[in-house]
Length: 70
Image (cartoon, rainbow, N blue to C red; front, side, top):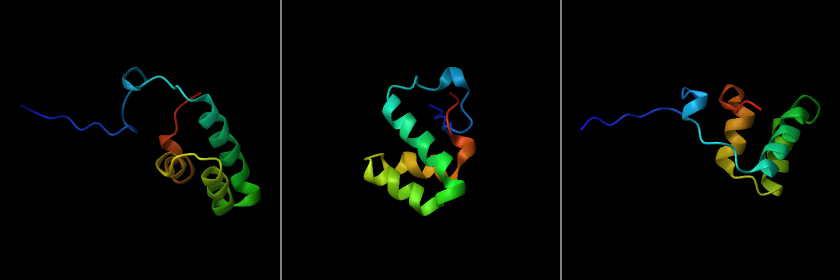
């Protein structure tokens, strides 16, 4: 059997799971918006303090092209 490994960054919108956690979305949006003024580290500290999983914080702050639309 062939196993497919699809990176979430390359998955089409139809293949992605619908967003369930609007609170995390809002926190990530705030952190991303603050990067130009506060810096990457402060934005990451904010997300950690707010309980955003590290995997999500890293993906959103370091790899912005992997963020979900909307």
